Length: 144
Image 1 (tube, one colour):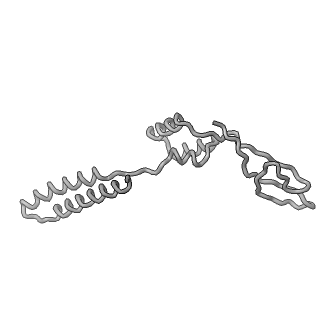
Image 2 (tube, one colour):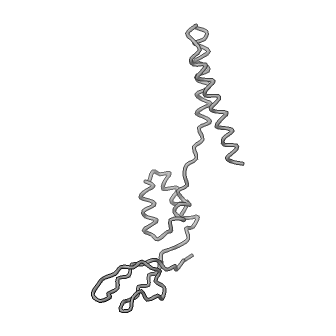
Image 3 (cartoon, one colour):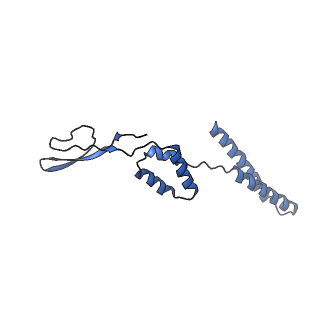
């Protein structure tokens, strides 16, 4: 869908030989007495389609740099809000790593406990289990 919005444009007007720059919304407004009007439409402002979103996400999965893709979308005339819809911040879920580490530390800790080498790895295992359950609770709260 095409969005023909007017943009802010820089107007230079001559008053008595002096140049003045004004930023203003130039619809049909006259900025100075002896000047010219600039009307600039953003013809390339489109709503981003789901097809385009899927295309960009597949490019990201293939290893295309995020910055280059954002720059291309800006050059194509997509708004910052539309671009931000595609590039959402990543939500990392480390629960599987915490649980795997806890089990590994637990096995090593039990082995070392049987060899009378100490409890350090069992303590690490307990801390990793604690972090796993803490992360699970945090994600439950965030999803509710």
